[in-house]
Length: 217
Length: 271
Image (tube, rainbow over all chains, first blue to last red; front, top):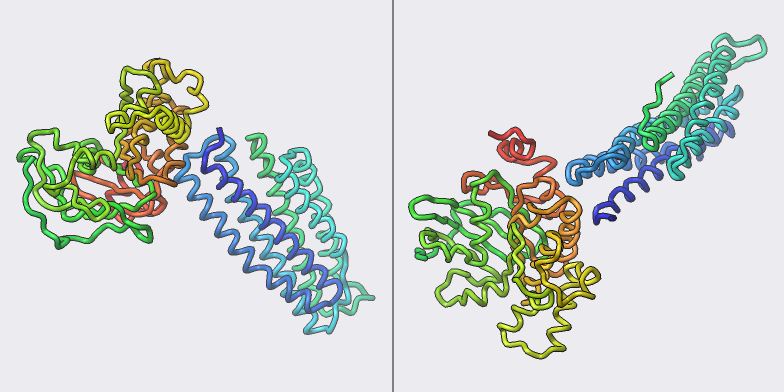
């Protein structure tokens, strides 16, 4: 029997998917702005953050309300816990996207354009596809897809390490300012963190679907 | 039942109905059984077409208060109103010229234990109309179907309307009693622990019904189940020792109550 308050869970689910899509969109626009030295895109990415923060608060409020008033059990209570944890992850991913845009703006202000993009393009493609697939695994209730997202995180970590080495040491051919190289490392780190949040979301989807907690590696 | 003249000036704050339209207004209401005062200076407004839940520990006066709304306490010799008024649609129901039978047509009641008449399902619903003088079969058929549909029972019993109501399950009997109360077209439905004898499935069906009925009726429910109050009601009133401690929107009462006594009661830290 479907109860009159079950639509509140559907609303919550829609909000969770929406915050995921917004966070991923913000990251993609921020990286596009960085790669193309496009100030307009960077400002657009920065402007996405408030809506993401608001959605996280709405999800928190609705989750606490549902637990308090509706006495959820089993998969419903797991879903509420996942909504609270995942919305926090996605809000953090939005913050990282915001940070990428701010640092890219610093680089543009200092250097006029981005000269050294290291492996940021490849990283962002991997990261955004991880986030997209993690959201899809939630929408479609697919634990195998979620598991595959978790496994892809190592590739992003490896690219970040590679970026770090290249930028920290510098090369004879690389005339990039130290400050710019440092900010590019932080951009790389932000993408690596977004991938971590996508991985967390995938772990939360597995918990939701199987009631099994995924051990953190 | 004796009652003293009504003071019109509220002594304390009226617990609010917020943005809704109040249909029941309670002012300075003091009620006693003999020398033992059961309700103290109750002031509150109850909104039309909302569900209002009364919660509180046993003996706090919530059922006594509910039974004041259709003057069921008139049946108890020692019951008396010491002060105050209860107005329904701006009529003080304790005025001398109020017809109690007429009042109970407008304010129906469903009790803790279902109490169908030992008659057929059909006759249980038609009973109230027949004693009002309605005899036309087509009218009775129409009202019986309408009430059974409103009580979400029609599909379950439409092929056995002539069967005894006593052969129905407990949950069906309780919904039949709700359907019977609806037959005389009340404005307000009082429910005194309507699910306390029901299993979880039957309880869920009654709660669904309450949610549907609030589109057309004002419902006041007494319940010992705080989860039920949280699930079904728009507003909740917490009573303790005959006093209205807190009355507010249900999500506020359960998520962030103002009074520490309410917090202690709803979180199980009471007593």
